Amino acid sequence: MMYGKVTRYFHDRGFGFIRGEDSNTYFIHHSKVNGEYIDAGYYLFFKPFQNDRSDYNAKNIMVIEAPERKRKHGKARKKHK
Image (tube, rainbow, N blue to C red; front, side, top):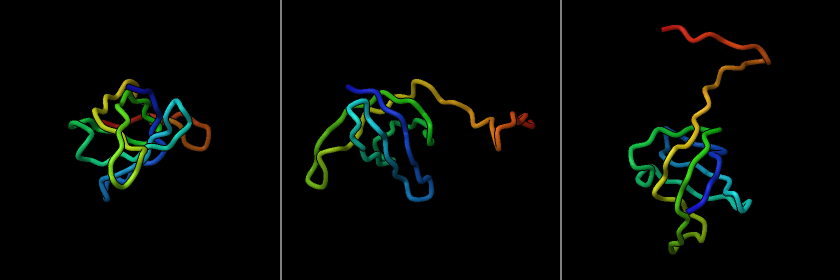
């Protein structure tokens, strides 16, 4: 298992990328996120695995920290409910 941070995630396409603690970039497919909601900036725990397309893939994803995107142009924003 490994820690990493989501660098990009394309909700419309169902995939994204994690920068692992080993500095490698891991591919995430929506079928491997176990129903977790993920987005760029999220800190994750995941299991790296290899397949026929890539040596760097992520599965068994668990969100550890999901920072809210509160800042825009350096100012805090309030969320409206």
